[in-house]
Length: 321
Figure 1 (cartoon, one colour):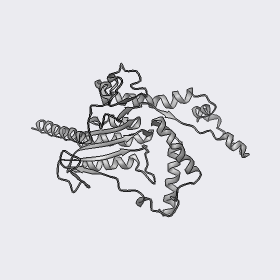
Figure 2: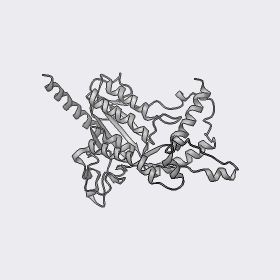
Figure 3: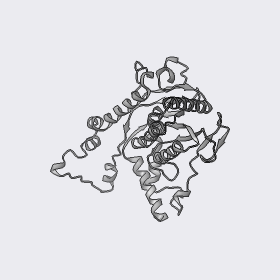
Figure 4: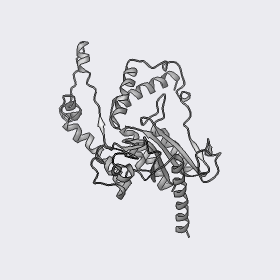
């Protein structure tokens, strides 16, 4: 595929990812996408329309491999690290399924996670999360990779989180443990789903463009929730599209976190955010409500992962006697 086609492919793919579909995302992260949409639609790509090889336009995915108990003792590849090392893989920024000119998609990140989990030198992993969430379809690659690491490779993966909201929290909840990496800014939650629709009919009306959408008599239900939403009638799209996703999210968190969750807390599974340390009400600390397991630095998360790896080794050894 030539360079021109690659450039156009990522440009239109990014527009499609931003403007369509449903989102597990914080509202301020969603609003922040508006400027990107405007720039893309106006072809304001900041020089990115020049002939550039997409595969060389991004920095390499920043994998770190820790041999000891501290992130200061790190290697840059799985092969260079000694056995029983811990791989640290970042999940940061808005989560999109496919990679763009500037960022890695969750399919690419998941592939790196699986490569780490499968490597003979890696005994545990840390997923370093700082994300307000993202597209709904960005979740499955990460959670499937985590499941493979834990169930197939029998290796623990600990989430070290600063911000883990919405899609990012779903990903964190699938890990063996969740460690908030500080008690100042670290926050988790926003368990919920939203969608945004762009109605540009009035804009095109002013340009003399009139859209006519015609359905076959046998297709009277096709796009019905969308068509009603454009008219300002949101009940159908809530019930048909958003509610099933919200329930799937809630069920996944309940399954992943189990009895740790304090279901008496209002909003716990309905979009509320929780700080690692709530200075106004300690009962609302993220650990107290069951959304995290501990507060500590990245090094603490590494130690947790290594301890779990040792426990897994002993458990597997005993079971194989």
